Length: 221
Ligand code: B12
Image 1 (cartoon, rainbow, N blue to C red):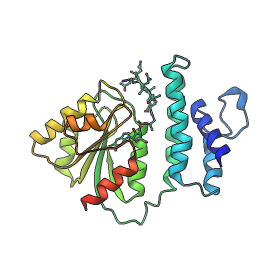
Image 2: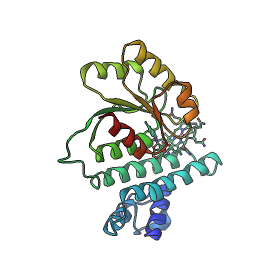
Image 3: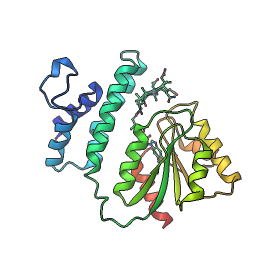
């Protein structure tokens, strides 16, 4: 299993979707994300392990190489594509169908920020645990969230940010929500976010682990 997870991390890093993929050229015909995920599922590997030890491990490697100037934006985009492909494949492993809905949660990446992968992972885990997710996408303003709150019954909001500049927009969203009379819980997350920051901006919850977010939401019911 360890071997498949390492190969999966490598395919995420290289953006290799499946055995038909043309990239990287030295891996022609070899397994890609799709085959490796199927093999891991057949070995009864829990989706949580596939996400943490395969997908996120690969993406962390991408992050390190990007930071060190060893790879560039086009490479990162290929990895991001492979990551979202993997998340789609894993969706069916979470028993969300026929499960009673516990409530609705808005998820959004904040204004100015285009990073979607972390939010998409949170979404799959929430849905797999019975929460219906209203995914507002990336680059989301407080106005857009408020429009949705007015038309639907929402139990909580989860905000994601990956840039030290855009995480400041989380504070703006919380202030705008409170000023508009919405006092529902707001959770925040994303690589640069910390508990200290969450306390500063009076967010109701922070965790780097989406499963902890599920525990928090379950306590609301
Ligand atoms: C992929 C990526 C991109 C892709 C995004 C593609 C996509 N569709 O998402 C692209 C190429 C578009 C991109 C663009 C940019 N990026 Co970028 N990117 C990354 C990279 C390599 C990986 C991010 C990622 O997906 N991580 C994996 C996910 C799973 O992790 P995560 O989001 O943290 O989510 C986990 C937890 O945090 C948590 N979580 C996340 N959200 C939430 C929400 C809640 C409520 C909860 C409870 C939990 C939770 O759950 C997740 C699962 O465990 C990081 C490097 C890194 N180390 O993070 C740089 C990084 C974030 N990017 C960076 C930069 C600078 C940029 C650009 C400015 C580059 C440029 N010069 O144009 C642009 C900005 C564009 C914009 N306006 O947003 C910097 C940020 C530096 C900083 N301190 O602000 C980083 C850190 C790279 C670096 N070392 O320099 N990027």
